[in-house]
Image 1 (cartoon, helix red, strand yellow):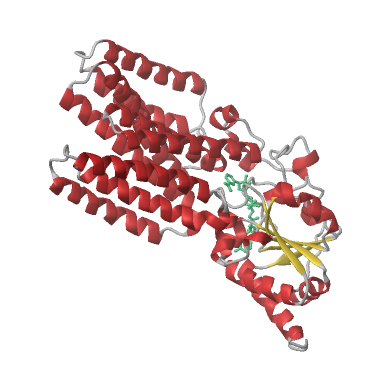
Image 2 (cartoon, protein in one colour; image 1 turned 30 degrees about the vertical axis):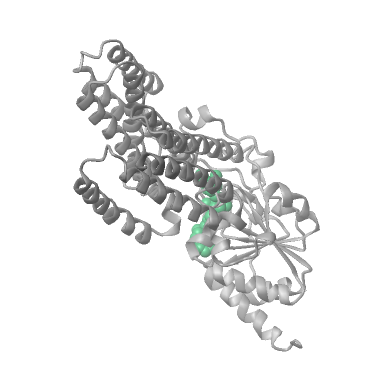
Length: 461
Ligand code: NAP
């Protein structure tokens, strides 16, 4: 009876995980996806707890409370803009859990053959994910220097350490009596995680986190083989492949190759300068900007990281409503790496209930800018920089961008002329058709609303 219950709960959990991923891939079904994933996890835990192998419920409940005491405040205290580092911490914990289970299995059960091979693989990935993710967290939280830490022959040193760990792992599988190998092997895996991440700059961290997610998934899958748990094999494989696909998507959106992210010390470009002709920019007041928006027929809003920092999404929703009521066609252009994590803008706009059918991916909307009266850029910078198209010396050369500069008028809300994430000037700001709207996104949009409200009062309802 218990066996049937376990099987059924694992099957149900696996199905829920698969649907969860499917639903999370579109904004309109994302919430359902999250709930399905949560229920799936609950079903999986309940199924595991009735397992006859579970001998010590007390320890499990202590672990449950310790985990919740860390996880719940993390979820509530860390702001939305800190989600990349929060995710890195989760992967660190996931990697550590997998590696510790592998270690316990090794010492308790003296495994051999295939099981030992799975444990070696699991422990290697688990430990390197643990330290690698902690380093990624430190860099993103700016506890550690965000710039790449590089030294001569770094890649050779790193690969030698990984090579040594692999050789020791294979040796252990071939001769399981040599238990002294295990701690050295684990130490090398921990060290490799640190060394793998320190040469990578802060700018590439989100991509690396997606990759670490993939490692954690693979480690969990290997653990599934080691402890003969089919659900773990499935969930780990889903996690591993989705993390990998995500990092590939992010690399493409930034026009980078994997090897370049891992071995190219990209973050150095944060100090490099783009070549921009220094000339004055044109700026406008909320009043002027409001009158341009009101007389436009079509407006494309380009949200970016600054919108998230200012938490201006609800004000933006009000602006959307005000303009739509006046007959202006308002659309939102979403760049795949706008903000600081994949889907950042979708989540932000969804929070303010901006209709999903007004959100357009870069490829869908790029052709529309040429017909748009106004491109309203709010806290976005790099994803609109035309230098990416033609300036071969620019660090973002080749990155696909939103064709904001094709619109008839461009208006940019940001606080200063400071650069964005890539640390370079944006030539968009110096174009004749561009108006800079200096100010915090939330305050500026509030001022715009006030202006539009004033004139809207005169309109027949
Ligand atoms: P961005 O290039 O980083 O620019 C954000 C702009 O927002 C800044 O120039 C800043 O200018 C402005 N800003 C900050 N706070 C603001 C506030 N309170 N009110 C108004 N404006 C504010 O952002 P992006 O265009 O979204 O581009 C994302 C960058 O992150 C890209 O370089 C991308 O490659 C990188 N990245 C993204 C991901 C991802 O998954 N999304 C992953 C890795 C890397 P002021 O300081 O003048 O206000």
